[in-house]
Length: 132
Image (cartoon, rainbow, N blue to C red; front, top):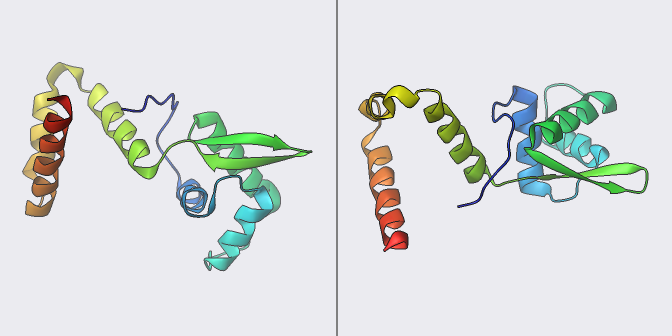
């Protein structure tokens, strides 16, 4: 299990799109690289350089992206995989209901599709196999 020091796993719409770019095109993207990728993906509007720079800075402060100095510029990479970020978000959500996690999980599972339940069973079997 990877330990992450994310301060927040909630992402706004533009943050989510930028993270998709960091995951698929990274690591080590400049602000200009991200802007170019946004344009290639037919993003609905052209964004100012400072807007994208602010989004990347915010992702870095949340611990979701990492940045390294490259001369006078910064290069950005995802701090964790999509799956690790999702797992952290799930754990964070469960931590908000410490009093009755089982009830929260049951509410979640009541709405799960058969495929989601199969995925959960497979994941539990894998965890049990790893711990054996």
